[in-house]
Length: 285
Image 1 (tube, rainbow, N blue to C red):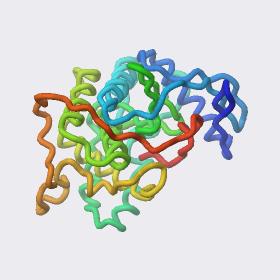
Image 2: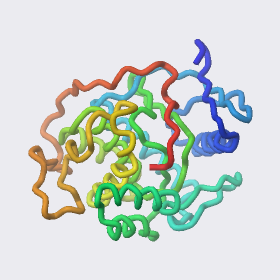
Image 3: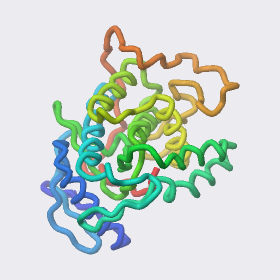
């Protein structure tokens, strides 16, 4: 990171090329959501404009959810309405978006063996092929930048098909693992903002909870790094959707009932350097 540029470096030229193609496709959606301008490209470097701002705090999450929803809505309206979750989708520019289940199944099965998660339930979620498709782009809370009322989206390493609500679940999981359990007003605000942005498509609450468990399993290995301080089972704001025998958490989430008031959040992210927004390169969550 220089004073004028953000340089993302890659060991693998194919990942570098793919990230540039992902950025181009997302920019072409014309969603109204800000993405950094991509300037110089080499086989191992992408040079972006620097974006002023900060990592979102808890109070910013509904606006982040709205930006995410606008991206998903634009992608569906412009192109993904003809896609299927169980098949790779080739865009008019030749970019191939992998299907939903393929990039995740092996990693989820490995995590399930460690945590004793129900493989049958996980596979059932992955194999819901008939739902309207949106896309996955790493929804880690650190992959957004807030400046005033504006939310920018950064990090373009991974892009796959995914159902509506999947990335919202990832945002909630990564924010909870960073800041602690989110309160009801924040959860309600995020879901309402996302639903408004994607209408008439839907974000089902039961499915959202299940998607959160997939993100938990795929993010588990990063606990204790990258700002992830809280294990998801200790901050999950609803009962485990796969464990009906377990009692609800001490502070259960009662959303989607609208809150009577919204209290300001005080949680803040861990300190990061100005050039750290694209530091994580991981397999799709």
